[in-house]
Amino acid sequence: MKKKQEIIKLKDVAKYFYLGEETIKAVDGVDITINKGDFVAIVGPSGSGKSTAMNMVGALDTPTKGNIYLDKTNIAHLHESELAQIRGRKIGFVFQTFNLIPTLTALENVMLPMVFQGYSLEERRERATELLEKIGLGQRLDHLPNELSGGERQRVAVSRALANDPEVILADEPTGNLDSKRGEEVADMFNKLSNEGKTIILVTHDEDIAKHADKIYKLKDGRIVNGKGE
Image 1: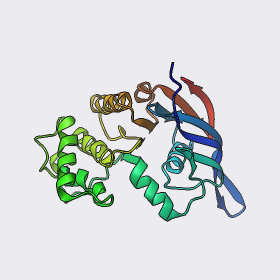
Image 2 (image 1 turned 90 degrees about the horizontal axis):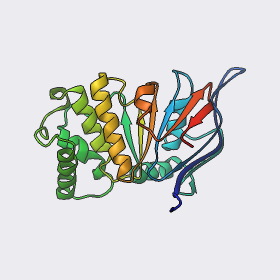
Image 3 (image 1 turned 135 degrees about the vertical axis):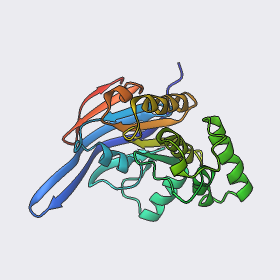
């Protein structure tokens, strides 16, 4: 059996915030290893540190201490310009509130990330069309976000996250604004992407959605209290 290739590793990662003399330990000594193609869920109640942990994995924030390896590169203490390059090339983001630009069509929203990676207009249009058709939105290319349902908007957001063909998809409460049926549809999309070789990290408080993942890490007070699927 071929050994899986490690893509993300957190070693004793912590994030502290200082309020006067008080220290808030949002993340407090987390160790996680994620392999290519894994579908990992990080679950926990509000304030458990799961979104803070995801932001550090996604190069949106840096840890107070510890090391974070992405494809064997330690990103824990890189400058913002270097982190921005890594985000653009290697990571796609999906958020609870979709974060679509309201004045752009579905097609234009998916095309947008490719502008910053140097794709031509023709290449951007072709790839965005292909991604949207793949998820059943080929008839919605010219619709604005407010003309789409919540489930359709989240599918556009997932397509946008895939625009630059990243290795890792980070999804922060992606089903939080959806009903259970639409939430299951989005979770099924992540299963398919994982089967195609994408690495999925899903942050959620919904344990039913988390069950779609191969591995589940539960956070409480900034620490992992159990891991399933190791």
